[in-house]
Image 1 (tube, rainbow, N blue to C red):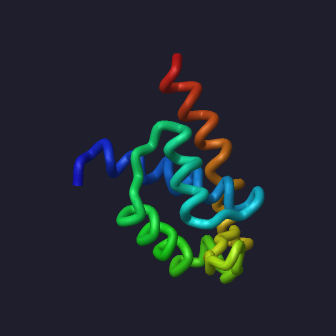
Image 2: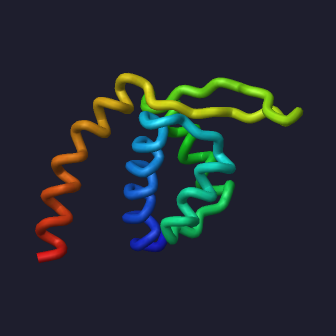
Length: 100
């Protein structure tokens, strides 16, 4: 795995948690959101990441049908919301140091 990809995957997970606790999302919408922020991530990376985050207890999912299409929507679990609260001050500190 490319080292920059490994680091970016951490950022992507935090981004996922943020949106999962804010409004929830389906995978297609998250790929579009991440692309909007400059991440180049395809389904072969995103869906295994979402499944692993769900397996680890950070996300939960529910199936919904919209416009005749079955979609899986992800939202943050209490553990996921707690993880996000825990990393926010660390993100702030890191950004302050890196951008000094």
